[in-house]
Length: 287
Image (cartoon, rainbow, N blue to C red):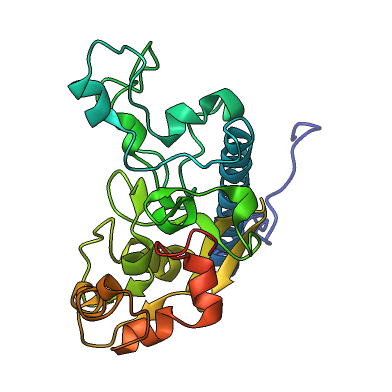
């Protein structure tokens, strides 16, 4: 006799459920293909968001500069001549000396806007103190650099209301100069980019490097009338010659003598009407 619950062994093996090795490899391959397709899209979307954020930072800077001028008889602030050296030479003046981020803070309430978001903000030893008087050398840092010719004309602060083409004159632009950026640039030199020179000198190459490596060969910039744009065709690419040499050659041979006609390939580019109106001049306070 056999127990009631006894079952004779089946001659057929019960098939266990699960993936075969081939099926598992197919699934892994599909995931890998999807990742290869989607990751570059995500990276592009992230870069596009950073570029949009950079334009927002530019907008805040130019509006702050315009509001500053509105409280200063329409006169722009000086990017270079009003910095920490003034404070150090005149310690009896606790409020002496300030760079743009400190000067404009009453209007922006933000110390992070001098940065192109494609670069990120580095860590500063000791942080970024904001005490009374001069805040410190960290205020010189930033990858959105002020253009001297956009704020200075004929050696003096520009009167914004006297500028003939405020929608074309640029006063701040993206610049790549690791690790702490380029607070301000000499516009004539910054308009020339030598791809064989990777120094990232604040007076040379920084605008060209930002355009090439961060912004698809265009330059994000803020203009005197308050609008921001990503400008194309505003930087001369030097093939095999030095930007500094061409700039000095033109300055020494022509512009220092009041002759503003080109004498080399770079100055011929720079003195085009659309380019000149974008970068501005130091010899004419209205342009």
